[in-house]
Length: 195
Image (tube, rainbow, N blue to C red; front, side, top):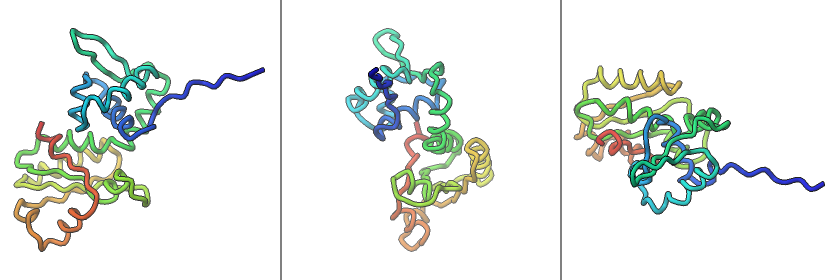
């Protein structure tokens, strides 16, 4: 008797696909269109088109027609919804959570994730990160900064270490930490907190 292969669920086949799933699954109450998803990920809608349709075909995301737009959402009824969400939370969650928690802090000019988390996200080999290093550039109230870090730490489940730098310090060539951050992988969340 010949066996028939089960259809393969297309998850994490490409980085773009993982980022689509992360955006949709980690913000399950958010309604997405192809255009809004492309803006959020910083890519052209044409880049996402085929990936989104594969995810719709696999029933990992749903598409509902509202007027001329197709609204995309995570399919919370899919049997893989919870495990995929957990994996995505580990892989991409800090970016989303840190953006949300630090977005409301007045005076923030720049927000970066640096250190081991950014290095692993960029594909650099090394040990699994046990904390997340954040650089906030601007004239920011320290109490608000640490309160945001505490909230993010609670949600992520690992330490969030904020570093505050003035604009002058960020622009200085002499600061060793700033030179190190500039020369290594970073995840720039600045655009996300200013939208």
